[in-house]
Image (tube, rainbow, N blue to C red):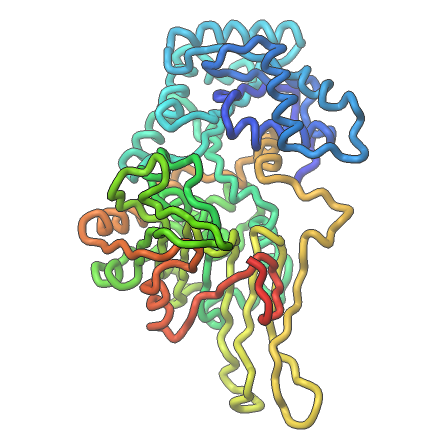
Length: 508
């Protein structure tokens, strides 16, 4: 993470009394405060419909920090109290454009009293309907105007429900804000291991030289969750796992994995290369939609001796819902670097463990010196995004003794071994980047539209003719998903909670 301290500015968080702000944004800001990476001076203005005074809001913030941020041994007793004094609150009907006069007045008052420039970051931690309307209201009251200081807008996903609505959202934003003002946040891109994927590849000729179709046989991207929909049933039942995980997070991870080397690591160059990948996703034919896409939904089961409800029996889920909680897709990229290399992407809820990882399966040697050696398996590179973040490479070594019996061994690196290094949370990194005007790890509008262009036909096919396969909660998804790889003579990797398990024991 850049250690650059941003210039003096204000941060306005819409939805400041909501769950995302409490769990993620406030802890991230507090961590930046502890590292002396917040601007000086700096003011955060929370905005929401919940009626709070400034003091009541600060009390709520302290409660959130106590719940979500463990007290460190080196933390000063007054540190949290000092931090929350940077925060103010404005009760506002965010859906009423006329009320934004009060927001403009409050900002001017704060900037005058604190001797702050008119630099402002607006963070929209709000439901999708408000994320479309708030930028309009801000512009109507001149809060997008950069004549007296920068104005930046951070928007959370979902960026539309489909390609058409995403296009409408982008048109709404672009009619009022310039592209350099719009920051579309995808917290997966802020994860340290996603960034390290790029460094691992481009900073090491060992990997960069073999990162293409000549040496890579297949790429596997997995995002599994052991939990069900929890308290998100209302949102999830109208979106599904493809919209919730694959359309945004996993396709962006795929783009970072597959892109060509950017001329330099900045927003313009990185966005150019990732966009080439996303626009190069080969549209699936009708036969491929039927054969290489599997949607599933979890059914009742027992996990660890406890009964687990079926998705359709979860509170807030519509009876008879056909929303997918699992999806697996085989795809190709129209790109010379990845000629005929299949990418297998899967995501699901109520799977055996919580894991997100990228796996590169390398080809066997075209001229094996030792012939068909028993036990010899192709090399594999695993980039673990979460948990037990790190990198694992498997390769063959000779077992001691006569002959040439080969045993697969692991070479691995774990982020937890960097005990003296604080690993920043994704929101911590992304907030600081936006304050510094760096959009490298944010999604561009063109990239979002390219993702929808690939995903829309998949969702349309599923809605009209697709099958929904069942799988017991706590398993690795429907059996039909295994067939996608089996037809190619492959199997999915079944990851464990720990990155480098020994093959005999797998902690889930």
